[in-house]
Length: 217
Length: 265
Image 1: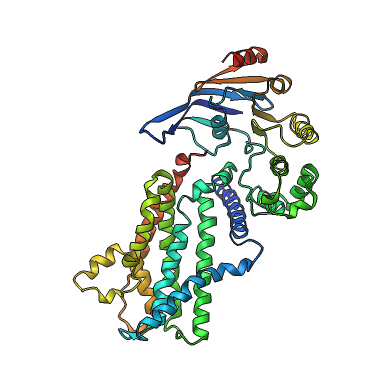
Image 2 (image 1 turned 180 degrees about the horizontal axis):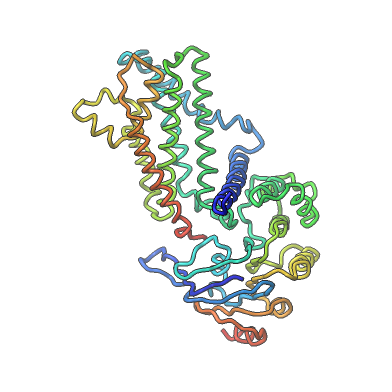
């Protein structure tokens, strides 16, 4: 269970002495195994919500209770150092999550298919290679709940297909929270949708209704 | 073991793994695989320290106030280097490493211990290496009481870590810290005892200065350890420890609240 109760998030204004309320009084729960879509226009607060759920930022008011392990946002650079090699990054993730290096490496090698580039610094990678490494690292650690912030379509067609399989088929029993602009993805994989608008949120079980409302915003 | 003790042990294990990971990452990120690699860790401060010592000892007399000049500058300059490296690196460092905080296991305190701890150890290493080099070429004599000198450097590191902890959190909250830090770290030269001994302060002022100047106690310990009977040292280890414990607690309290003030892009 993830319980979000009466969460507000303010950010400082850079130019004036005031706050911007990005999220205002948001409450919802996510049950184990649920696949929740987060819909909203640009600036509606989707990424802020993902950051709060991941725990990297704290809500200004309200609370978020997590009764399961929550991933860092899938595919996020997550502190991948540019001068570190792919293997260094694998070693870092393995170390902080206490996984055997060889297991994580085998998985990443198989999933990202970076071959000999794993021993090169990440700054020499192309954008697609970087994304593949980041995705592979996110999937290499086992979480109860995966957070996905928009970027799920990375890499070539083949890699996208593998990412979808990895998330929606192999991890069908896990909880997913997916912020997305793409109605097709939401319709085919999600069981509920949270629509964000002007800092407020409303939960829908009826996906078609949610998408219709999102399109009207 | 009780449940609470077991939980504490588990938390401690996680923290050890996380800090270990950050230290390894820091070492690789900072010094890389090319060039001198890990050796650079010890050489970097030397590259700063030796030219300064060379210039100073060229323009001043070999003995001043009965103390050998090179050794006096060495004891003055090494703690300044430690201070600059440990506190300077802390400025805005949470913001710079914010992406790492997406990993829920990593806390701001872990980042601090990992990064500033590495920096502090590297600087202690360079103290040892530069001493060895200066001793080998005969520029410095064997300390009168080397454990006191070492203790002085350890207290210097503790003091620098306290300041770094406070600076790190405040720089996250107040933009102005970035602007006032360069002049402060320059004025610190006069505050810390870079160029003077506590004994040179008029005796009616000395107790007041010593009360508000923890790094001066550290300097006095280092110098007393090195010069022994050749100087009259003034330091108070229990008082210094008490001040540093207070500062550490204050820093940890600030750090506990640090996540609240982090704003990512």
